[in-house]
Length: 464
Image 1 (cartoon, rainbow, N blue to C red):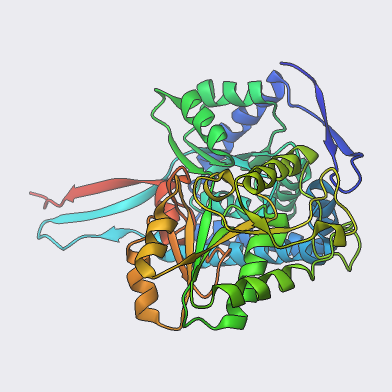
Image 2 (image 1 turned 180 degrees about the vertical axis):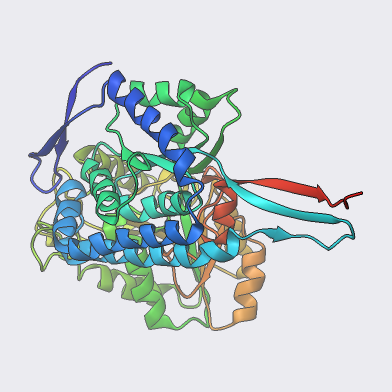
């Protein structure tokens, strides 16, 4: 193992916010030993008890909302104005997944047959290793952690090194809720130890949210182990504004969809296609709305746009913008109007005269920039929206529900929105195609990945 400690450098002021120790080999072994012991008792607890215990986790988050929100802001830079929203989202999504559980985890009955009793049980897998990202550290944790627990699995969390306090908070919430020892644990891990766990530890499922490169590393480490994994990876999510759209709603919603969280959302809007008949009007209104952002210290209550997570991430987006401008793109935002433009603080940018030969329209940006192109019709919009290695979400702005459904049926994506974007509905399946990953979380389908079917075929006999 390399370094024993790591620093969390806050993008707020580029200073060390907290320092933590990486888990050593003995601590890792102890965590998996505890998990093994805990699983045997946890899996036989009645479902109603597991639901009740997991529901108490939300009480901890409600009671500690302000402190948790502050930690989110200092660790990854989201304006404090919005950080509490993730805590609320954690609570709401947890409750939704617990509401789904009884129906999904019940016995599956089959047609009756004389002389036999037949049914299918959903058995927990065992040890779930959950790796969560920094951009929405609590919301992404809900997707795998809560369903895994209520289904009877035990969970070991590894949070991003940028947001380690989130794993500690979730584990503390488990303790406060009364979860038995070993059922919900966390480990702070470096890349070497993480890879070693994936290669050798007694795992039964791995959930990962992060980059495409990270997803490939997970698959490589798991090769040959026959362990199920769910990978939520990158995105280059498109939006299409038809001529019949509610114009004002489309503008304001798409500005928020592209720039909330400084554009650091896996399902944030990164490219927009607008019917050519309203294109000029749209981009003028869009740019005017973007100029209203206040880019400043995210601990200030008036700030509406904070820094990106690291200066290196901001520099990556700056390079995409510069390259696009050299290739003929035109910027609509004079970044000199913003208070800051250095390091992790990156002003929002809107580009027109863009095309798909430019990286900013092709490769994931994960930052506060969006490109906008005019289109002639639905067919051209569909072709451009599908011209991507990614397929997480796609959004259509229109007042014609049938048109939205028809367009959506032709889009290569996991989720189709109409008149909204950048949102996860816990009652709908969260999945992607292509480089956006594989597997599924949320909804009742999400439970299928965290359990295995076990068939019972019982022949009845009579004494004699």
